[in-house]
Image (cartoon, rainbow, N blue to C red; front, side):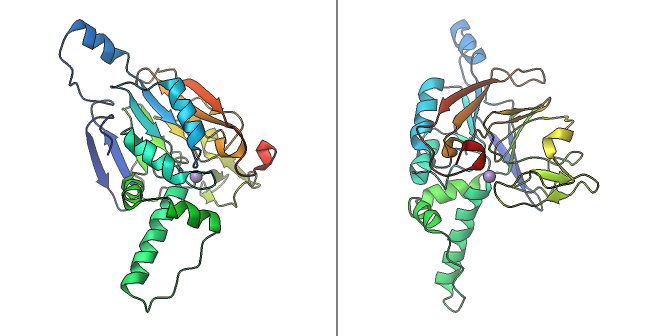
Length: 283
Ligand SMILES: [Mn+2]
């Protein structure tokens, strides 16, 4: 995984994978001179929301952020699909040494690749149902190394004792290594607390609530997946999918420290245009 983000330990439970960025975000590698120490103290943890193939917007946001050596750079997942250049985005993210939590769109490409390989190894298997042309075009833009990078991405990253990164959400009251952690969590049933499934772009189904409404910690959670025109800032949660691919904005959350009282800064760039329709973004 990422070189810029320090040493890693990663464990796979019976379900979702959890990665731990050891010792905060990066190891102490710098010589103990006052200048270098002050550089280290100014390093940041930067999390960028769902890019969905928007290479131009990602490039513009990186120009604004100017990540430096020592900054840890992360992505909330869904690097691919819907936008113009999925492969270009994954290669840029890889070249930056950035880390990623796996989004459902990233996962679909890993799964499709597995199906194709299984079918090639055993032609007696039925052909899997053909995905959309857009998906197949995005898939063709991904190299084996890009797919391996997506496949290796964990479902959850613990940035520090206080801060956690996931693609979609966490169920209140469940442990971080919950084997039953859904990659597309949005709404929970009011009585049972179980996940309410929904089609893309549907409003909250009756009798449900967004997971972040009842999120009481103890972790501060940064997430994407749920596109809204403005970042969804709760007491202990920060939703930063601001719909770049729908003509909204690409958002970065910047942390200058990783303690429980850290105050994130939100930095945006506006999308050049809408690449896909979405009712909340006038599409
Ligand atoms: Mn998603």
